[in-house]
Image 1 (cartoon, each protein chain N blue to C red):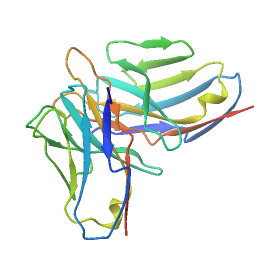
Image 2: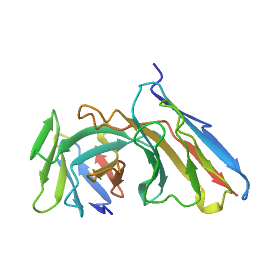
Image 3: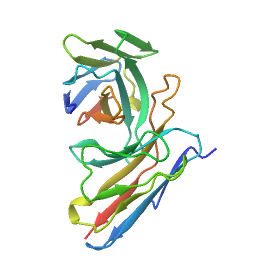
Length: 114
Length: 113
């Protein structure tokens, strides 16, 4: 069982380019999340999905979009990358049934926008 | 929305001593408070969590306390060891449909030998 995986591990991207960060979980968790982590700012929620077919905006959604076509996958797309989107991106998932609140994090994607 | 403040930003303690990290939150509807440990270059890992209907929870050397009236919660680590050195994050989850966590900015815990 892999748990939760992310791809790519790292990426250098030119400003203005489109980029999709991939996230896949094999735990059949209902809920999935995207966070960005910046030094001194902790982790901030970008978008979330409580169940397949639904998504919601978090604290810092501007410039990002997500989709949740199925339970396992939750891609994050930057339509036109800007340098301020340089960050480490973490995907997470949680069961959210039966009182299971724990969020499990993926290994992260380090993105640099030049 | 929810706002979580975490203090201190850096904490240095002697090996064997106790460490305490404190967080406050703003949304009285928040009902779940996890603590994560993150080592350099790694993903955050849950170490302990507490729900709003519980005042204290312990797991070996770590404990979390919650004061709902004052809207603050704390992480206590006793008999600190070198492997406890890491960045610790508190978080809160608001009630309702918005399901993600709001994190504090983190505490860098340094265990001095």
